[in-house]
Amino acid sequence: MASERSVTVGGVQIGGGAPPVVQSMTLTKTHDVEATTAQIAALASAGCEIVRVAVPKSEDADALPRIVRFSPIPVIADIHFNASLALRAIDAGVAAVRINPGNIGGADKVEQVVRAAKAKGMPMRIGANSGSLPKHLADLARQDQAEALVEAALEEVRLLESLDYRDFKISVKSSHVPTMIRAYRLLAEKVPYPLHLGVTEAGTPFAGSIKSAVGMGALLADGIGDTIRVSLTADPVEEVRTAFEILKALGLRERGPVMIACPSCGRDNVGVQQLAERVEERLRTYPQAFEVAVLGCAVNGPGEAGDADFGIAGGRDVGFVYAHGRVLKKVSSDILVDELFHEIDNWIADGMFRPKRLKMGKPAALAMAEASAIPLE
Image: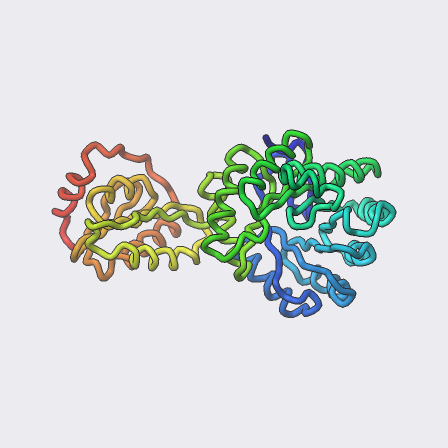
């Protein structure tokens, strides 16, 4: 179910029916302003909409005013254990703070931070991680960790509500995907607040992307989740790319092209893996949203390429370029990719008009056989 309430982080709406927002976190030492702002710029170029920076030390808090000034996207200060750093971050003009009310120093410290945030009209992120649950919930965690995560989050919610503060979003993250899914589903039934999704400490790009796609995808498909972070042991730009691929796969966001590619098999006559990798690399430079199919044979080639905006289907020595369900041309295989992008670039320059689609009236193999009669250009 979609979150009823929303928060605004530096002009970016989260929750309340807004599309899911992609965020990431810098890996740099925050006090190194040059390195941190350079990484934020790279994240913003990749599509990141909100960025979080760690503030574990006083020197990191000292750097926040300059980072906020130089950042092209809203900056969230991530703070644990030290309420004074949270207060300094709020004074520095960050767009939001992430705190854990359970480790910030007690209810009086939480009240200080909330009072300062309210005065600035600033939202917070609160919530629990499976690796840092409160000790008094240890027995419950041994019985049902998802229930313990939700109870930890609800304790924080009750504390902030008692202070008449409701400008926050919540997370209940776990590195165990089934626990994470169940915790968010339980929480979504109990609160109206926006939810920040993540599989915490997901891992390396391969395994971490799969875990994140399964965990967040299951929730997003049910309408649960308002902002996401893919937590990878990698360059954070990869987190943003993976996040958008998850959202694009569910039809929730558009950013850049979507590529369809066949898995290859014994019918492959063109080396479709290498072909797809070449196309994917070149597509990364395009911000426009469109669909490209890369196929290696006559069985699925015309059908799949016909459904995409553009497509190529390879053969031993020649390939076919498709656009909007029609065969455009037959070309020699060595220039197939170049010809594909020539057509894409012309289409973009002409305003990206999508003609009415023709239904594929013949079997794919027959359509490709007939297309073989088209002469090489």
